Image (cartoon, rainbow, N blue to C red):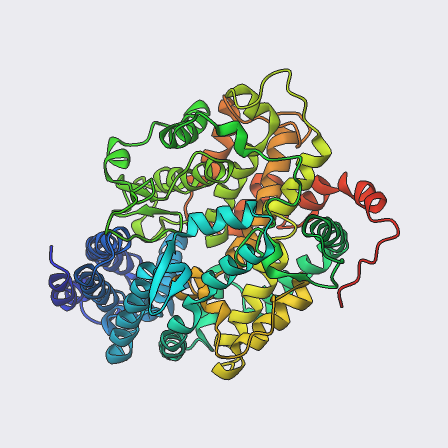
Length: 604
């Protein structure tokens, strides 16, 4: 099916949906009317979604002008179907009679309107401009050539994101680290003009359907207001702040000694082993997991991730997953460029699942492969007749991330690493150092970035319409206040450092999903460890446990058919809370207090 054909058919099929109800709404048949409309709409929408997903996959795995054009056309067709004025009118009319409808139909109609708010047909020229601008922005990001050394107008040393990440993790040369850090920020000014335009287009699209801003529209996926979301995020930041301050203090003194510098008040960004200081790998030198993967292949990494799920009773991945995925780095010298951000894809909302990664045999990709397959198995679990296509998604977006993150925890547990032969049975492990490494690499240092810097800045960008000549300053204000980090040198508005983050361009106004996922994963892990495996959460091994698999499946197979709050209460007996996360890291508190005794820990 070509990208243009679905858009042309949309009005015909939707008119048929109206006709099925006998023209104007009939007081004696609201359930039947809703059923007929939703069946017809979902049938068309699912076909167009597949075409758009295929086009986006091609544009992400082989960045060319031709594929960008195909992605733009396909996404415009999807936008036309989702935001058709007939769809909006019909869904609103039916929801006026929600008390007479089946609860599942109400959820479906609300999802129809949320999807329509991304591309309302009442402003087709704005929607088309947004789709085109987003495609162009993605292509600019995916095709950019990072460069560690420039010679005249050319690049003497092109580099990849994987190489930059490896250098920031391993290099002890501050001058080299600075070159890497600055190279990864060069794309910011390139992307800023596009983001200025996209901010305006996204807000105009959201407001056409009554949302105050594009940020408010994205928060609506949770059934929350922006004020409620930000209050929840701020609460988590406050709760972890005492532990974060102690971890920050330990890190800045350790790094200062490593680089032969006096301890700073705030940590220079290029000292940290991540391009955005979102996680702090490499702080704990005694816990370097990469050597465990020597002699392992890239293929083994992904195969072992699949084996993890199969051991819990999940099926093997479809053959098509292995045939159609793009799992490994582009070979050196190849002219093909692809998106290097790991992702999972559900192209037909049935069995066509794929992953886009650049797997290398190291600890980061071992964890990432387990995470991404968590998304894949979530997709497969809710792809069943009981879950309508429009509701084949996570209970909320954070749930989808949370399941991937939950398995990331499981993939780092010592008993699992021993079982799969990465750790010898007699190999000593300093459990305190491992826990410390986990706090730095994936959790405590991450939360003020996800719940704070990214979420606050994007809230300001969309809801506050922050002027473009204040973007970089506001960004670094948040990084300083919430993370205790500062740039190596002053960064004026000729830079756009937040623009360098993939999600700001391609997955906007949703980064709090990762904060929700971070809190959720420890809540689920605590329940699995204590209630199902009957063990300490630091000793849990999911591998081979069909009971854990059954518990996970009971969550995943529901999709969006149930309110996420109710689903979580049923599963764990608790509301979403940081309690389990703080309990998990509580053993670090006395250790850090002793390590930081006598040190200046302030950064304000």
